[in-house]
Length: 392
Ligand SMILES: [Zn+2]
Image 1 (tube, helix red, strand yellow):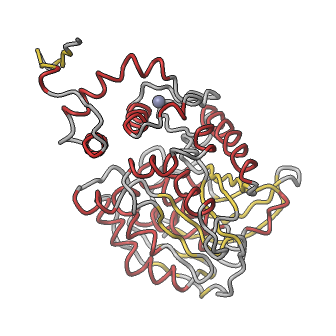
Image 2: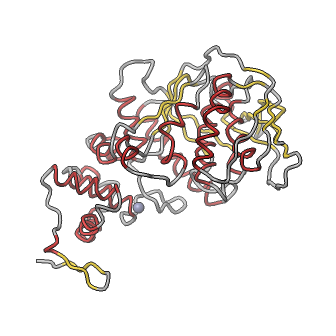
Image 3: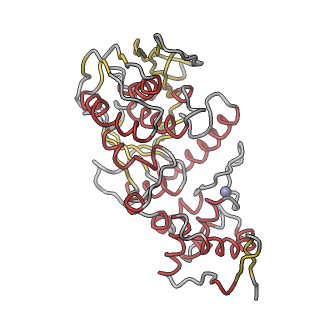
């Protein structure tokens, strides 16, 4: 059995932070983990944002570990009735479909948590990537309904910046915090930074699942602050319908998993599926904040948080912007001289691989719509597996 107990909220780090914590015990489970608690931490003056009357924030990772070890999950306290029922009836099935290493288990709880809404804010993550900026542009800049307009931004340190405890992780996290705080300040929005240790548990072996469950758990920890929270999706409904994308838990299932990660007090909304990636880039292409802060790079090294201009994500984003006629707007975040040297080869690759990968096909389709000239077969030929380009 995996048992979660002892829920508490207390001052930590010499009273500069507040921690929400619970004990986790592996009883008759053959496993060694580097921690015996699960915790979230926030700066001291935001401490009341943590809900300490419910174990909701500990349920998803506890459930995942129980399903992995094929043992029951015992929570010695209360959880949201809605989340409990969804976890028992539906979420376990989705996780089992995603990973053959997981099996259904029993969830045993003491009772149900209070249901009165505590949070007044509408939240969203800020990473400065295309998905995050597009959601903020739509749900803050363009939105006028205060019930749905973003009123606080969040950064969670729960696995998306690297493995727990690695020096590189903290370095990447800090550099991203600096950029995100600059954006939040420009937008005059508060930014909530949450540290957590949920990714001490199997994140190194199964990041594709643990990262996302940890991320959703951070939102559940903040139920005294948020009544609504937007999760930016990288997948469009179109791609979900036509393609079998199973890179990780989010790309495989977030369109139907996130609507089940709800309590009576906080609603998680999946945002971004209504767009293809090229549509999101078009959405933010005239936004001054995006011109200054867009960061899509896969190759971030420590404190260096600039776009490398060479990785697949940088290249495909620059091509979309060039097709849209907006690339010059982004001269501050991409090295356009480098792009001009490599762009023709990348366009050749995009045309050649348009049937293989949606990110290539979206750009090729957009080029066709916009009458943007792309290389054709007469411009290049293949010799020994290499594409050779004939320049005029
Ligand atoms: Zn890059």
